[in-house]
Length: 155
Image (cartoon, rainbow, N blue to C red; front, top):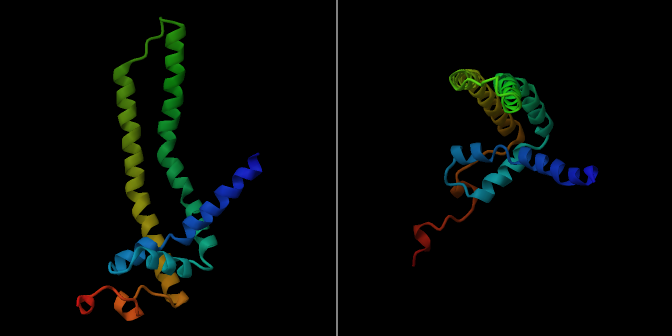
């Protein structure tokens, strides 16, 4: 049963990497249609999907570092609550709990302030490299020969 579920997950991951540059194509040329941006992304990521996957794996540690304190505190708090339910002599302090929740959340925000811009700039660097080496760039719609329903078709 487990192997059959991989038949849906693995192609989904590949498709996510195939269309990863569609947003950048739309940002560079807002006149592009949705399907055109997806098609450009498909051509641009050809040969780069493995590198993009490796990039995501290399930044996985930063995400884990951001969530580690909250995970540890959540496990401790769950154990403390179950202890409190079993033994009423072990109170769980709400003030300390709230303070540690806020501290762990602040830790995650601080890590992500440094992590996310670096990750997005690296991903944008891959986009620029793929755009340059694939020979496919998001030209304006008019230059690619696609009709845009302009004013000449009104009458």
